[in-house]
Length: 406
Image 1 (cartoon, rainbow, N blue to C red):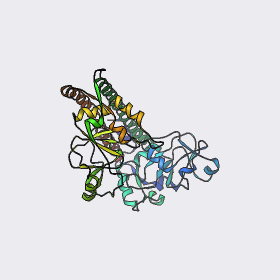
Image 2: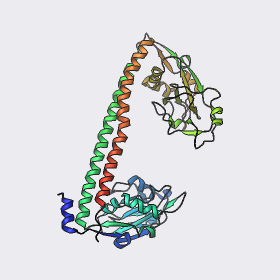
Image 3: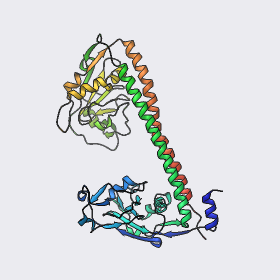
Image 4: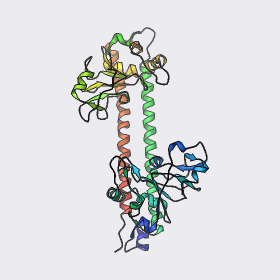
């Protein structure tokens, strides 16, 4: 029998009381505070938008401050109080909360509610993250563009309230689970970073050639087609339009791309319809990034992008454009002020080494293997984290589903 089971058997063998928030504390609405009110230092505060950043954590320090004059007009949060975001654009985020555990008072502003109570603050916060609470807030939330749950409605939310020793034990277990998940995430992230560095090292080593190798400008070994310089009308469904933000290396993820209808697609592909394994490059802002088109006739190019149709080994050219040598050239030839721009002329002049076809294929085969190893970890990392999160949520909800007293 676990420690938690023993405590339940000893302290509440017949079940626990289920109580509304108003029965164990008070819920009050915060008052006006905007991001423009923040100061470099002063009185510590948590703005409602920051609750989403702190969600799942238990902060002891704040990142933001307001003047003492403004703080005197705002609602005070004491150690152990729960700050709840009572408005959001979606039902998932409304009522996200944070338990303030700092040893000093802070303030909070509008769009928040403050729950003051005499229970274990972490236990209350865990209850307000549970699936049971999510189902309750779904019933009391209102609004369309902005979803809101009023403090008065929050007062009627019910949570199981076991004796404090049981609350403390549940918190201890969930804290340990959270810590283990965080440690695993850190380990996997470190492994991914190491693999990426190893891959980049070997890629750049393989793509350094001796002085006997001749270089040709990119425009001589590929057709380069500029995008149409206008903003389209996007559609809910249709074919994919690739924008600068979609180009991140590897194959384009068309699931994340915005869509355009057939007429718009025709307008944006009058010059050229991108083909499978063509390359695309970003020109403005996040310039010089390269990705691969996954299929023919399914994408058109948005503003500030170019299509590169290789006349040599396509994957070899892709790796060349990602290499340190090519990226250094791009960095030296980018223009503009605050909005950096890579000109079409500079793209056409990127130097490309001309080597034998079989040597291109050999290099591609080696780099593909490294890329696959990195991709396996990169794609597996979010899945592993998601699995751990689901496991945590399962045990959290199970522990908080305490038998109600008859």
